[in-house]
Image (cartoon, rainbow over all chains, first blue to last red; front, side, top):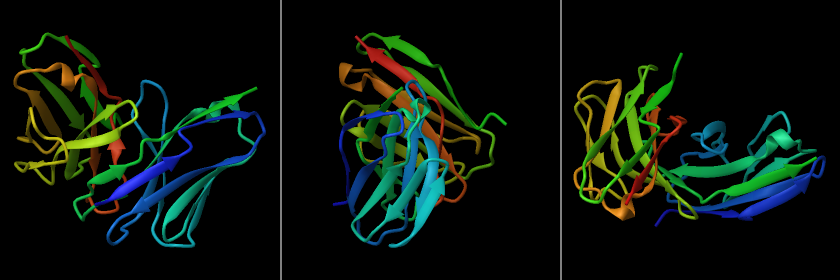
Length: 110
Length: 113
């Protein structure tokens, strides 16, 4: 059975305090791994797709990496506007159906 | 460019009532999905469609029906609402499925009393 597990559930950071979020997955035949950001009261917003082990992608203070079993989302020198819930997901078939993790809620305080 | 639009934003139903949630996308996407999001459980797929006139069951389809009569619209129906269907419902679309990223609407918060 396809599974996606995110840790920690919640993370509280001081502004400028870098940290990493983990997403571990078990899926038969990885078709990619997605990272999304979700603000309160909003739908998930697409951040990155990673396709193969060793791949890295960056966007502002966020950097996503992928290994054969897990992905990390590194937040470098975060700002309060980086506060959000970060979700990772993997496609479970060719129809684009996604298996989501439960998310990591990140709060960045000034 | 509106993207994915969901209506209504909020709804309160009594047990046994029915309702329809509407999702509209203006990106000419083939694939559309309905998810529900509950605290601590992540997003779970209810139903999906791979093109106009097609629908298929997802992970948690019981108690829901869907229709995709037009490519741009995907409707989610609750025939007889139950308190267990209290949730936030998200519609999403993608161009070609597979590893194509999903674009989400901003959700409908449904409470069933």
